[in-house]
Length: 333
Image (cartoon, rainbow, N blue to C red):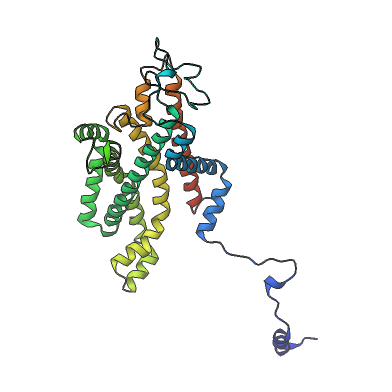
């Protein structure tokens, strides 16, 4: 015997509504934002997390360089001739003079504390790397957005400038420029004066790389439906750029910034190795490698320690950057 449609409606109205979250044994389904999804992916990548831990450790070491030198080392420019063999000019003891007093040994001839110079070298190298990456990111984002969104002759001019800078011999120009720039200006001292010159040179020549990426992504995004919807509602170009396009470009910009930092570290080390980077006696990882060339056969630790620190730093940044790229990729599983 069928009850008919009226009975069905009555039953549905009189039956108590049971929410899915209130049913016993069942859990409510909570949505996740893109940030939560990316963080969950990143946490699963143990290699990327290890790289991030090394990066954070190096940043803390660079910030606390004066305290670490005071607690565990000696002033980075203080000679210790009593730790040097007067005949061979090499450190006394094994492994380059490593001891409880000198954790990483001493330099040949001068006897300066390698631990203190490595710690202060981290401060120098990371300052140059982060600041120049910041300059490159700002310039590349601005010009890449302009070229991709405005198009026309503006896109042509900016693209040709990027092509010119990418083809320009950056290292040779940096050597020529840094050779004629005075060691001190603006009252900053020779160390930080040269740091800001390196930031300007490396940052200026680094922005075309990220500019190319931002331009390509902007060309793809400007034709999407949400941009057309903003235009149809009367949104101005500034709102479309900063409220619609830029948030969608945050992920590739962030990933490329983490990948350009190790490149900047290597560039600074190369310039210091060639003698046009941080002026001596200020510590720099590249400068220490340059000084170690003369002594690597009789004191290999003098070259192994700064070279190993550069290798670990660059590897950690690259591993973290690769993991961040995978975590922020919406197509990745």
